[in-house]
Image (cartoon, rainbow, N blue to C red; front, side, top):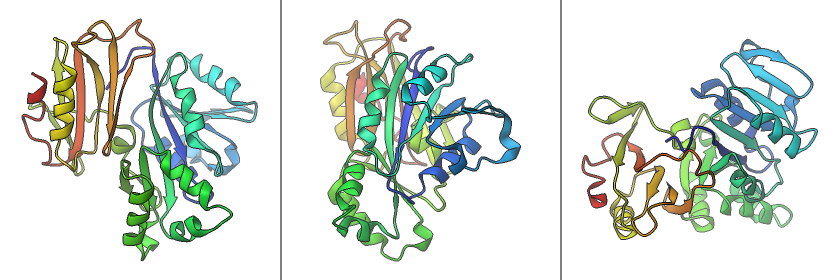
Length: 298
């Protein structure tokens, strides 16, 4: 889903120390098919594959796939300014929060001019999660990070023998988050970012075990119809995102996002080059999206 020609979508990666955030950032840099900028605290922690590095200086590493990595040593504002000045602009900015940070505070920057917040992704260590939550010193920090998540990457599942208990704990702390299971933080990027999967002529695309379908229309949508669509989505739909214009306020382009069971509708911050009409992309397991999933919008 393309918000605007000029907006950069922002994904915040959070999670407690040792959960696998840096491993996930490396995975994103290796697998991304779009131009991505990543902000990290310290280059020394991410160990980027040397075959990907095109050039580097004190605060920036350029990769051969068009991605770029910026250090936060000079502060968030300076790193953000450097990203916004890039030509051509990246389509996505990934910000890795420190292990004890509140990712929701960082996500607030995703509403800055030129940016559009996509989702807060929190990585948890499935092996240690139950112990961490019970720890009086760190339990509140870990729980707060989980509550801030739109997407939770349950990492190290190959080493976890208490996954059922982990699922119960996460469901109690954040019942609306999308749960993504991973070994070595190799999470499906289409679930993390909710981006459109390449479609076939039949308007259904496939990548691994996931598929996507797209709704496009010109006339404003009744909010009541949009809410009916949400209520009737199959329970295993992972993400829906896009831009709609509501019949109640047709001149205002609205960003719609559904992640797991949580959804939001907010005015597009930068309306200068906003697209006309409505465009929504839905993503779910292969075979889970009915052909008429968008009938409620007509």
